[in-house]
Image (cartoon, rainbow, N blue to C red; front, side, top):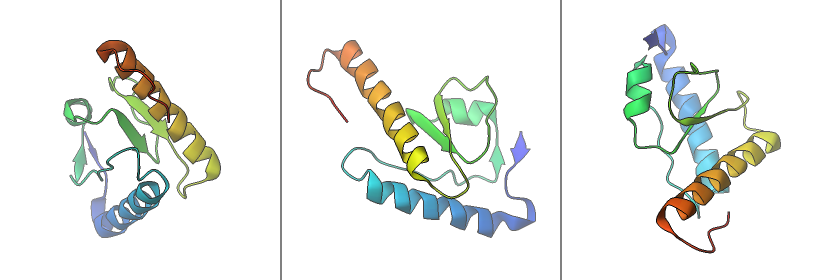
Length: 105
């Protein structure tokens, strides 16, 4: 378990919300974005989320059974490209699993 925010909880949460707003704007037609709102982070909690992709500004443990994308502290074009590639991968996996056609990001 990791205490994500310590005494800087409000600042870290505000930063996460800023990234959420930028991603929501850039990718608004494709996905729903939620900000992690708990003070304590654990592998079990991350694995229990319904999210297909976890985006973080720091490396997460390899034991997380979810697709993760680590981005810079401030969102860059490179970050957006990696996120879009991850979304495309998820769409393709779902298309294969559920037999959908024509899914493209």
